[in-house]
Image 1 (spheres, rainbow, N blue to C red):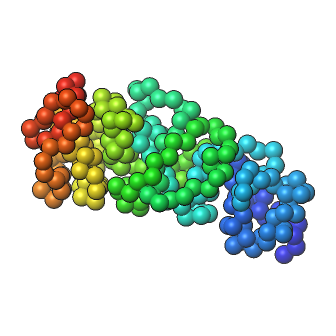
Image 2 (image 1 turned 90 degrees about the horizontal axis):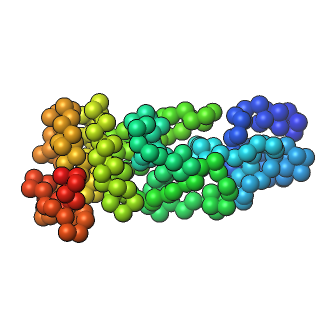
Image 3 (image 1 turned 45 degrees about the vertical axis):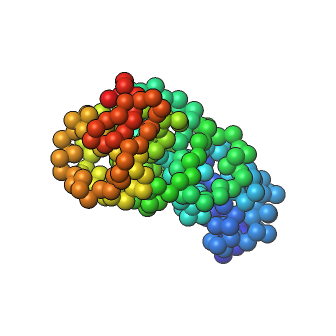
Length: 251
């Protein structure tokens, strides 16, 4: 295949706004020298070390996440309230579309170009492994990009993980109130695999408070909720069943 035909094939297969990683292109048969030639010819432009976009197009965060997920196999996904909003669960809450909540596995080192570029939305990245990176995710089309985001159960747990310092408890409960259609089997799996006692207790407490019917199909005996009290806030009120110290306005 000639260099011109390789370029035509590349441009034909690139969705509008897609980002391509140099390392991935090299693995697909596009040498670094050939990539440099494409940049010099004005077909591709660099937006950071090791990442390019078609000339004339503006990078968006969804394309960056897609490139990391699909080309570099990085464990990162849209989660928390952003995922719930994309799934249609938080439309009644105030939320800035200028911010996107991302979760990555603990230890993941994101490339510098994520920080160095101005995206269409500001990424807030939390690196944690309180849940296995591969469970509770769903495919979601965002613009022209198909990427992995948290499903509703995992996204709710991620909101609770951020409580109370990065996410208000009262808002977390409002979100839980809207989750009346969660699948018990998925809830069971995530509760059993979750490594955060705080998240599990808050999830169960809020689900009970909201009166969700699916909760009666969850076997709480198989969920390790630890022992002793957990103080979520100082000077709060102790709940009896889940031994949580919470603000009075969410009990």
